[in-house]
Amino acid sequence: MPLAPVLTKRFGTDQPWKIENYERLDGYAGLKKALGMQPDEIIAMVKESNLRGRGGAGFPTGMKWSFVAEPRGVERGDRYVVVNADEGEPGTCRDLPLMMADPHSMVEGIIIACYAIRASRAFVYIRGEAVHAIRRVSAAVEQARAKGYLGTNVLGSGFDCEITVHAGAGAYICGEETALLDSLEGRRGQPRLKPPFPATNGLYDKPTTVNNVGTLASVPYIVLGGAEWFKGIGSEGSPGTSIYSLSGRVKNPGQYEAPMGTTLRELLELAGGMSRGKELKFWTPGGSSTPMLTAEHLDLPLDFDSVAAAGSLNGTSAVMIFDEDDCVVRATKKWSDFYKHESCGKCTPCREGTYWYVGIYERFENGTATLDDVETLLDLSDNILGRAFCALGDGATGPVTSSIKYFRDEYVRHVEGHGCPYPGAHVLAGAH
Figure 1 (cartoon, rainbow, N blue to C red):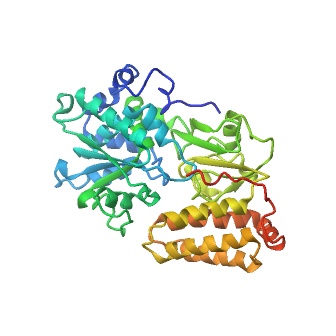
Figure 2: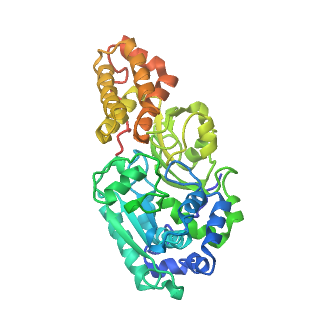
């Protein structure tokens, strides 16, 4: 399957982050068209396109917008668009390149989203460590304001819109939308109880839509090309393209934009194959929180529905690849270390469960684990999954349960051999 440059079509051109160069390549043409439409027409078009959120959950974007647009008694200034640009999932690296190379596509998508849901203010929440992206997006916002795409009476339409760029404090939990909202309001980043949902009680307790960078960057292309054009790319249930982040044991790691439904076999061909000449052993379809898959899934279409049917999640399309010399137990331990460190501590299942995960995996590493520890890991997972306050706890169970499902024999070898049978293995699981 060929690469499909839509979101990345300006990558590699002459300084696409500068507004003059962006405008030469259809930049802000989608906004101009959108301002000539009724807000509900735009929402209907996005609904018809079946654009699904690129942040991991895959929720239909048009439907999410319609929830926020519904309370007709709410004044325009009492709604918000919030952009989740936290990007903390291990293995994920697609929002940062997009914000660096083509920030105006996101900015244009934000303005269209504000117009569609009748909001006049948006906030872009960027992970604080990504100083370069914060500066690039802030500059793009200033350029857009200077050109009349932001501010009062945008392009003479009577529509007002402002965008604020906010640097987060660097917590993985702030990738969860309600924890992000709390952080944006100046509080400690911890998830809120749902319901109520952000669509009715979001930022400052006002109707709010929270969208991912790639989701909003897709919107100008949909407005320009139309819903049918967008649905003509990718699979039926997951139209459009995705930027797949390939890392690990591949010759050419990086970001590859391809139609949704592209297989790992095709992505590996694009990336030059396995880097060490070894066989594929296990991989993640959407970051460390998605249950791992194996070589038997090489031809699985990587879209929301197909991956879910295979027992995993498409997530953030962060494809981490491991070969036959990598230890699956050690990789899972590294991911568990991450989730223990990033747990906000608000709920007992996640706070205590991830702590016990790490303690048990240390026993597998130092040779003191027993076969009962394998069952304890599964029992722990049962007590976390579906019982944690937010999805971080559920995500922490994904690598544990899937690694035991596919590689229980490797756990047994750790027990019987009193330690890791891959003493020289250097696992690449700790990317973040």
